[in-house]
Image 1 (cartoon, each protein chain N blue to C red):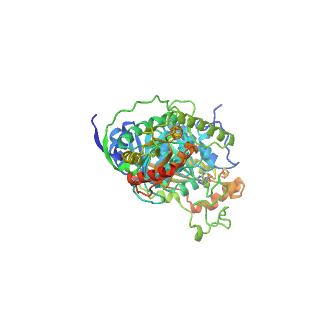
Image 2: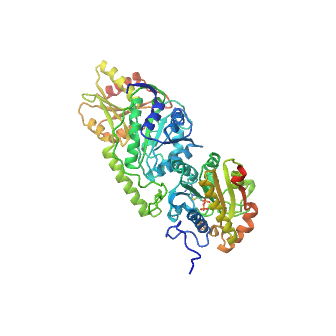
Image 3: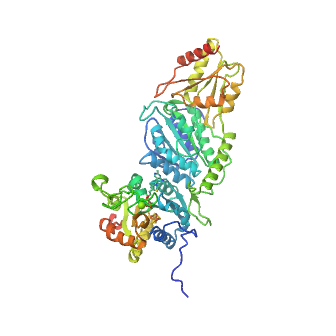
Length: 355
Length: 248
Ligand SMILES: Cc1ncc(C[n+]2csc(CCOP(=O)(O)OP(=O)(O)O)c2C)c(N)n1
Ligand code: SF4
Ligand SMILES: [Mg+2]
């Protein structure tokens, strides 16, 4: 198939349909409205169902019901709406239900702004809802990557019976880029023999539940969940390394910021400064080993995390680097975007100090 | 010898955790018997609430989901949209349905979701230890209304059936009680009818069941039945509010 020009949000919706998503429950919020709008038009044509819920709270609980009933299901929202979904996400993780949640992040806190941001990193990766749980968080840096990751997200969710979040900053949702829909290799997936379909001849009833009233049983449930999360950490980490060889400074950036950083790296190169980039594609599980390896490279003097936030991923970079090299932060929040020029200056300032 | 009574296959062997004399148990039986008699056990999917009936998923023998507090109607919406030929029901208390989940029940009714809600109104938060519910009567004592509910402070008790009956797609709305045998039999009829209407695809149906909570009302089970009759029914009249014939 030839490349076509697609708006990020619509491409995400189309990718979900191509991945076999049949149900979508959502509530309007900028800057992700094109996702539900596309689904409202296209899902019925595919024999699926789009429903506009009365709130994000209702939407995520519809997702819970449909996922528990065995369907491929998705919801999307933006930051304030994702906050409202957190209780539901915790229940989905606790009941081990597969689903895909898209967050097209906007500036916060509160009503914040409707411009692109990355300030929901903590909420997405550290468990925005209550209890101990983990969720795979995929962070595309282009519309093409969003399309590829959304398709795989459904398989990952089904494989582990776990919610998967695709987190794009507002830019990913709103910009238009050339896209090619290539079929992602399908994973070998387990039967959904746990789903509540009605007995239909089955002897034992299926129960979708996250309540374990006995402390010892709830403890065991947590242990089992964490054995599963350990498997995810072993096999699902994705990361792009760029220009690390001989780099004096290594940037950490994800999503569209990583593309801005690549421009900054080119400018630095012109000034005779070698810089590299580690771009986490999975924000959880975090590519700790990649950072640790870079920290052990003698040429690397420092790390600089660049984010559209006041500094969130930088904490994971610090944890990964284990104090071997200094870690710095530069960010813009609330919908403002770091410019290549500002990033270059920040890097030069750090290297001046690190010499 | 003929069998005159037998435990329904709609309930599991699990012993319930309800307080002695609690009418939740009777209501479970009525729902399970209705499903069995209508031949729906094989395609029923129930949704348990957060409240005293939170373990309903262990007691009903059909497939079950446990929803978060108040969200059973949203959860049931997701289920029914995936399996439109199944018999889907929510079983919810008055705190669950009329307080935290008020939006979800109203909008499920508005959309005419084709599932059945069993709404257990005991005018109190049973599970958390007797706090005031939106349905607590004026003057009724609760742990968070220690002097009794004052309408100038906490407003008037919500009449859920009357409210939902104003929604065009809530095609079956009936309030029943389980404080004595004739009423239990009437309650069963209403529950059965609600499931029949669901299977005919006519729209949303709800049966509000007036129920006791002797433990948190501070009464013996027998006193509680009497209190229900004398105090709840005058404010919450036993009545059919909507019938599909009416909407035709
Ligand atoms: C989000 C949330 N808020 C509060 C609670 C605590 N809680 C558990 S049950 C309950 C009230 C249940 O009352 P009702 O629905 O009337 O059921 P009953 O126990 O009377 O049958 C509350 C407030 C909870 N589990 N989740
Ligand atoms: S607390 Fe009340 S509602 Fe709950 S089981 Fe006991 S009597 Fe029933
Ligand atoms: Mg109650």
